[in-house]
Image 1 (cartoon, rainbow, N blue to C red):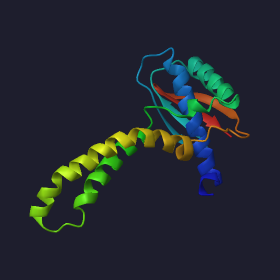
Image 2 (image 1 turned 180 degrees about the vertical axis):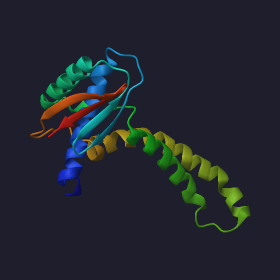
Image 3 (image 1 turned 120 degrees about the vertical axis):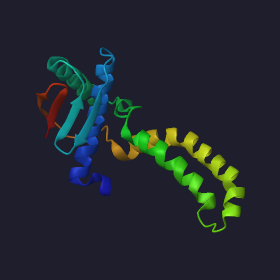
Image 4 (image 1 turned 135 degrees about the vertical axis):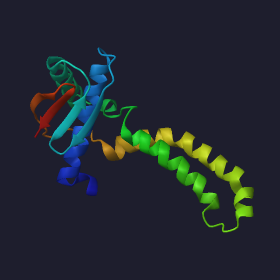
Length: 161
């Protein structure tokens, strides 16, 4: 399966660890935080002490290893944002997509609006489902944490293997 190809699987596992780390940090910090994952690790953005990032990372790693797969899903994930933007827009577009007459488009506008609203309500569980099944992998396999470094103020780099 394409999701199990090496670079993709490594990115999904790092994405899960990123989310779990953000969950751990959110318990003690109220600062704005974000992350970005790739096959070799992830970046954490937020004004955080390196030792606290390291401690949160180690706890997140241990808890994912212990089976707490729910930590791989985060409400602030870009997957949720993409689902919230794309699904309602696509569903609103569907009823009027093949209609050439402006008059008919105007008549179908309430239907398009209803489809868009439905898409909005479906997007929340869709974003969570996409994270759980596509964009993250809570089973870390043989992943190891190699290093945590402060790249510059407000940016930490977590390197995994």
